[in-house]
Image (spheres, rainbow, N blue to C red):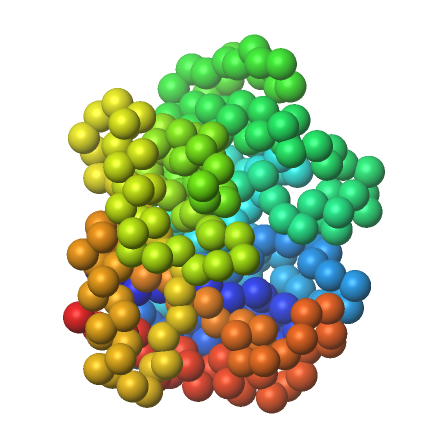
Length: 288
């Protein structure tokens, strides 16, 4: 089991310097991963926010060990070749520590609808599949072209290559919806959500078994759980994560955001919650 944090780079953490400082503290506290949300607009409070690639560049330069990445990038609203260029740059800047989390995007009415972008989930899923093929093809550094329904790409060579043989791709989606998990099976990890409820260890056994049916090779595959521990009650935290480890979860990613501490949705961010977020990061990860 590895342990990461996932936070919205909004308000106080929309300053790349503040985000980088928090990432440095996370690394010092023993966390294994530092992930940030990827949004243009999130809700009616119109939070200040940092561009995720700019923010992660600052994070890369302030850390040396911790894995970094997005959770999740809505690839259907990005140009795949632009994302390929950004992610290669981040992977090289971090010396091979980048993980790319992707999904179709939510809340779609804000991140897509305000800008006249496609909001239909089925069409966005098609864009996601084609976009992933293109990003991975460009990362190869070999001759690559693509002819899809939504994207067409003449033959190019995209250089430099990432430091890693290939940047890991984790795919999000809502369980028990099956198509996102079949998509995840093609790549390197799954980040399912349970909708209005937290996924249980039994849910994870079902998810792992379902994905296994569609894996076409034996390369490592991550099952990534989004959860919350106290950071102060070590026995309770250990008991909680042990059940997920036994169910096959390989990453515990702690949600570090104001809403876990009681802030109401669609309200401006209070500085009090930034303090609570920093405190939870400094308390470090749970451990088995």
